[in-house]
Image 1 (cartoon, rainbow, N blue to C red):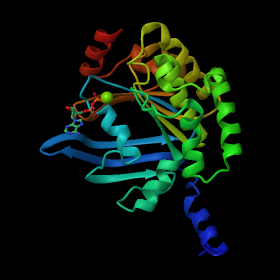
Image 2 (image 1 turned 180 degrees about the vertical axis):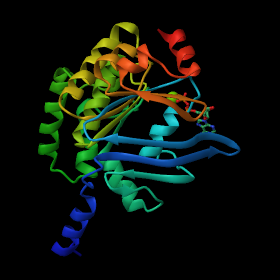
Image 3 (image 1 turned 120 degrees about the horizontal axis):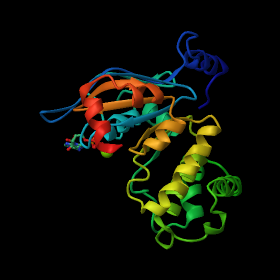
Length: 263
Ligand code: ADP
Ligand code: MG
């Protein structure tokens, strides 16, 4: 079966951002519970194209859950999440479509240990995007060069340092050509000397214009890269401001207290 030109046009029209709204991710009154526990409370958040957002807040405040809802690694129970014009529902087609557009980098890399670096990078493009192997490998090598480890292509993840593994994970996401990248504390499992090499890759990625949502406590990164810093506590967005304002003129007591602990 094929998709008619008419259907394609309608699909294209539907996905055009409204002129007054350039959000690639929109969360409207999003609520989520784990059993009785209310983990996300009335989250309203829009991420604009090319925007770089840093999310911070105490451990357990719901940061991971928030970004995991964006690609349906967690399911929200109330409110709307719209990614690039497509609302997240239980429709598996929509979930798959959104997952193709949203790259995710985890704290613990989540590479396939039994596959080489190159195979980790080409798996998605070959099996999900049906790219010819040679094309997928050429793309993979380009991204390995961008994260500065092309010489590691034929090694296995276990033979790499943590910083190298995380750079492989970033390259793997980029091979899927995502429209937005989510990072969940990408440097917090790394030894201090490896943090910079990963942050440098993320800074370069930001400079290419990638839309990024980064959960991190690296406030130096927030200062230099973020357009907006979001502070969460107990499942709520307490404050969101450009870094200058966020760090020098925090509004709420909870933000002040958090900043005094981490700065
Ligand atoms: P953060 O990333 O800010 O540390 P999380 O989003 O991981 O916070 O977790 C928020 C809260 O939800 C925590 O209290 C955590 O224990 C709880 N939580 C997270 N995942 C689950 C789960 N799968 N089942 C039950 N509770 C969970
Ligand atoms: Mg977390």
